[in-house]
Image 1: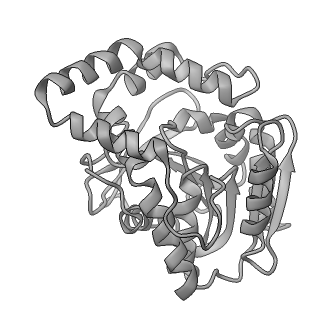
Image 2 (image 1 turned 60 degrees about the vertical axis):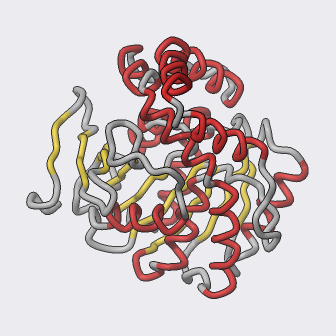
Amino acid sequence: MNPNRLSSVVIRKSDVVRIIVPSPFGPVHTRVVGDPAAPGVLLGPGLGSAWFDWCGVLDLLEPFAHATVYARPGADGSGRLPRRRPLSREVEILDSMLGLAPGPVVLVGHSIAAIHVEAAARLRPERVKGVVLVDPDPEVIGAGRPFDLSCLLGDLTLIGCRIPAFRAGFGWSVRHFGVLLRRVAVGVSTLGWADPVPLDVIRERYTDPASAEATLAELAGYADQVAELDRLRLTHPLPAAPWVVLTAGRSSSAYALAQHRALAALSPGGRQVTVPGSRHMMPLDRPDAVARTIRDMLGPGV
């Protein structure tokens, strides 16, 4: 790591280190494990997710990889809050993260972050050693911009936050109910998982109105990002690197499975793998499956 670009501080007794990385949109907070000389892995969290959702994966990667999970600007103290989140912005943020590794990396994107890592793989093929899409959002390839009700609601809420009274009520709600919403989300998207970090760490992340607004901004830009990626697929081929789509075994519908198979088929050597014992938050339910897929991509010498 270049000490002129990065600053770090150990945040707990394990080997997880906090790294602050400069980006065009302000400093991005990351958590990193492993030897900087080891093969690089970049982990992209899903919508509203936190770095500690990847604790199990980080623990398994630490012996053989230099693994980084990042918080996008506006969340977890990172950068400036955007009004919307165009795909080009996400790729520029990933560019900043790629500077942490000296060579090609394995890109891992969960849920909405699958859009971002696929775009980065198409635009930065020389930096990609492999791609793992972890239970990605199942949009029809080639259909363009989808109609997404949650995207519309996110946009309307952000518009409401321009009104001082609405913004004050929004902030009060986040501070009082953010942890409860987090627990409900984890409860319905895992098989009974308990959070891996102390309650004060969860409170810091999920009672922060700025982090909640960043999540809404990402949600509001989702449909546009899907359309941007569809256009990018026509002009920028995937790199000749391993390409795996992991599908949650306990929550995926026949529709989602079909779309995941189509997504895997975008690459000549692509594979779709159903992971039993997992719902949508696979990094919590089955960190072993995610880490094993990554290790396979890094090669037999790892």
